[in-house]
Image (tube, rainbow, N blue to C red; front, side, top):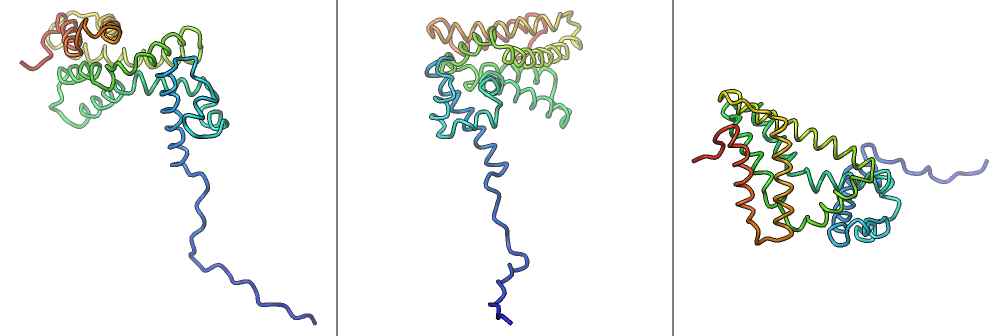
Length: 226
């Protein structure tokens, strides 16, 4: 009978297993890295710099990660659009909804005023975003996926803004076409931002914000604290 060596030592009960190579947290970090790198590429070179090779080199990752996390360049472009153009406003919308749900002293006037302020915050009303915005706006006209994302985001924002306008106007007895006023306000913000980016001597961010308030207050009444 052949002798056998000692049986291999069993793993101790309760010993921790090695963590998975790619955790959900790592995946989220890599998504954020790619979005930030793609945004930097747009800000420096416009849509011509929005390539797989350039973005992956900027992020320091392999080429396959863009397809893995975003299903291609179009998917990544949509995420850049969301984070660059709508993050600040959407965060303010979410905050307004949360405060309305949790506190009784968050008035419609305060909610609408906060939304106006968010449009002119330094993170949103920024000259550094000029090339990003122009690149994305130009691409919307020819990119069906980006155009669909724009329509979804724009419509959601306009609906929320119109609801906030109506919430202020109706109790004050003001007859207002809230959806049209919301559309015009968004167009005013875009136009003022573009004018300021192209020539900052035309107006200041503070003057732009005042113009936004003036457009709304002409129809719904005072919004700013005196």
